Image (cartoon, rainbow, N blue to C red):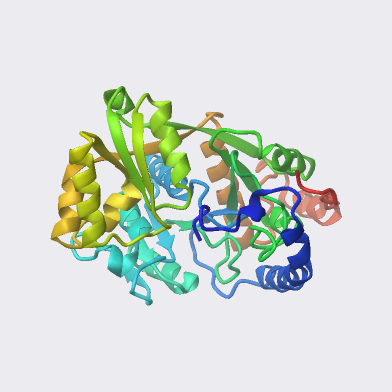
Length: 377
């Protein structure tokens, strides 16, 4: 669901609609939490890192997955990206081939992932992960699926948009939360704040109290200096088009006109012609996102023409803490080794006597920290 399509009251702290629907949300939340806490049915013999978010809509999962994939390759891994293939017609586990598939087949996100690493789409996360292993991958990066229990995850990095935060903090349908926050935070291994704003501050505080690492990021537009002072007709069919428009303004683009479409929007010939004609009439440069470009490519003559005339804005995320990626991969490896060798605690000094280490591990009791029962906001 696109953020601009979500009910406006989801993003207001106090609204009568949210309270009216709360009884339904309470029941839904309990069911969703129970499902999330189910034991995974599939485990693979390589580390699995999941990139998810607490709420519906986008928070920067695609560039985050790409950041992790590039780091993984630099460290000698062979990363594979697992996507649900949202918006695509193919419903079985499939290796994405950009020269063969288009957005109608596999969805826009999968096409972008396939430019970075071997990518498999599959609604069945376990089947998709096993196919990636068959393709020779030594690390699985999940795009979304944090709340899906089917595949065992060794590290769960959960994103929060600094501008949107958790909205009103209620579970669907009275708010944007996929599962009640307490259960989700308990499953998270770290929180990653994306974008600019202060709406994630309460999440940062609660995550810190729960002993969860919190990382933050900067967004960089690749080659952004070349776009300064250009007058633009910007269009986007993503979860939060406003974020894209603000990004353009932030690098000095003069956004004279803007056109928002729903998330994963399929452009018609008429819409393509309208955008082209308007840009020519008003003497504006067409600007769009990588995801929109992926949905235009190979979809028809009008779509290819619009793509040809559009400037594709490419962004990447950079962690503000240089040690973030190293810490994530170290913890993922430790958790992976712990499940492969359950009698070994990977955090213990390897020089310790084996027998003493095992005894200490049996005697050591780590009390679970309670997550404070405080209203979000």
